[in-house]
Image (tube, rainbow, N blue to C red; front, side, top):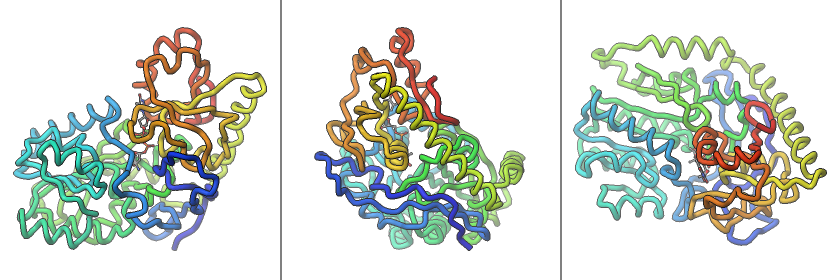
Length: 392
Ligand code: JHZ
């Protein structure tokens, strides 16, 4: 049974960066719910995939050194540990992972035409499709069973999870491995990172909820890795239940233990989280309003989807954050969704005359801090809302 616990107000599509600001940009009610039976946390209103993931999707996985390194490390691990005949990536984006593999040993699935083109041009084998059973059948006819399927930050974006895992289980070799990684619900609760919720993130996974759903399709988690990426993610290593060759790592039980310890299986945890979200909003607004009173300019660093949730939920306008800087070509000279706040192309002088920068990309704090040593040295300050709003 679904129980709503958080209302983040009206939110535009998190990656709909308009060229010209429109005060009537379409917004959707964003409410978050917990299923007391499956223990799944999800948003209550689903937007059709083709409205969000189309030929002008701006998010590029390879825009940060941190993510490029993470995908490179994973591809080395896959080659060394599993040595698969073929890797299939669901949601290959601009190729941050697949370009680490030989062109004949990897297939990408990417429905966004602009992103698919990037890897197609490099000679990779890409299917410009949404992931579903029909596609899985087509792939099986063409390539046979696949021995390694990988997906990062994609499956949580697909509404019909039963179809997702049914299709994977159908295509995966009986001794095959499925690796998925997505932001961790436990980390979100601990860090009060409510900005992990936006229309694209239909689900926020925990080991408990993933395990509950995949079991229906003869799949089980055999290992888990906690990652620092995207504000705390979990990489799940999954196999078929009837494949007894792989033993279940102790890390899996440890994760279940931690998630139960933090009571991720109980509604009250989410109700308490919702209270903390309200406090976080008030505290952030207090900081920004105080700086405004003191005539201090604040800019945003990293025009993230996450920041869109914050701006629209807290009703932050350009009087509080005057503009954002970002490196993504697809976002530059556009407006933060739902807000009259412009995104300016980042360059090494972007922070030269700036004193305060709000970390929209707080998940890259380490990478950004080491890049912005001069800013910090001259007394520049970052502002973050994680885990609690403060000037760093
Ligand atoms: P980043 C997206 O969310 C959307 P976002 C999506 N739904 C998802 O699941 C997650 O990714 C994984 C910029 N930047 O990765 C680049 C700089 O400008 O936190 C990006 O626009 N300079 C698919 O948007 C943004 O910040 C820098 O030095 O919340 C980071 O976006 C760095 C490091 C980043 O994802």
